[in-house]
Image (cartoon, rainbow, N blue to C red):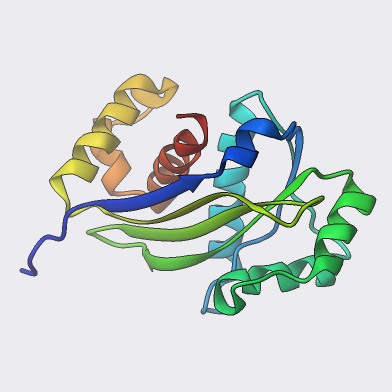
Length: 188
């Protein structure tokens, strides 16, 4: 059995996030080193749904003619983003910001692990408004307790014969839980 590493997440919100009137956000499908597009779709959609649930943002997840936007996935490798991507997002979708990122860890079997690195960039200024970096390892007691609490508060409570432990058995359920935790850092 491996040594348990504690949950470590970091996030930053700039002062500009509070001053900006961000209403419409585009979520660019996240980068992932594997050819498993279904993983990218599931994780990206989970974050998008949680953003929509806040009621604060109009969230767009474009699927067609997005080759230029997909270059924004390289933000974490290059440390910068092409201004053409920001212009495209602003003009074509009316976006005030884009959310781009990468899936850093993905293990769909026990113990489930999901890690993400995300950033929200203002399409007018190119400034980083919010960033998140973290790995959720279901082997961590703190993560397990958070997943249980999330399940207990959710409407799924009556639907699973496994009870709250479905959160640690189903990667889809676990992904939704992680997405909820990540988006909550935007609201705090």
